[in-house]
Image (tube, rainbow, N blue to C red; front, top):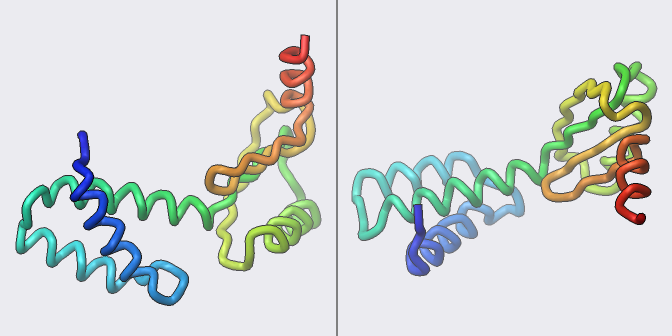
Length: 130
């Protein structure tokens, strides 16, 4: 769906109002969405689409996906969590995945940031260099 510039501006203004404390205030966002749905302003579907995108991106910033070739034990998980906490803050949630294609090492994704220390990633970078 194509979202108009006015809808994006309105959604950004609403989103900033719901981020008053530096983190997303769920109750404010719910009430804002409820008000949009009941009042149905011009291009309300575009506003809701832009709000959905902003919320998804904000939640992705606080979620870390840690992929490894083999299951990580508790010590390795805590070491990875400590490193990510130092980089991104304490508000992160963690998801651990086993991906045998990595061969070895870790691949970590937090929002748009990807930290690839896997063997597969190194082989791919080497192959692209040639």
